[in-house]
Length: 139
Image (cartoon, rainbow, N blue to C red; front, side, top):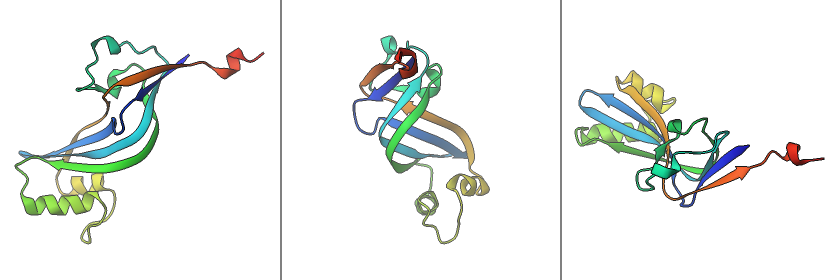
């Protein structure tokens, strides 16, 4: 049996990467407008789940993001990142830089930003559906 975890609010699945360079930090990634998470194990995190905090998808046994729609790229900087650097990094992130090309992850690392975490989260109110294997019920 599979379980589908569906957020009931738009934008409740997030893929996030955290980069650091000295005392500066970038948090960036995708916010998915719609999507779901699948697992083969009955979710047991719900008894302690806080919708305002959410849960890291890696902390849900056997879970992975299965469907996503209409991802929106977002980027945030620590207050220690100078404004001119923010502008350049934002252009790189959105792929509009005239100076740099290629995936932003590669360019950030070329510019001495270290990828320290890559995580996916789900938050907000959730619905869990049991998905029965259609092949088992067919006779």
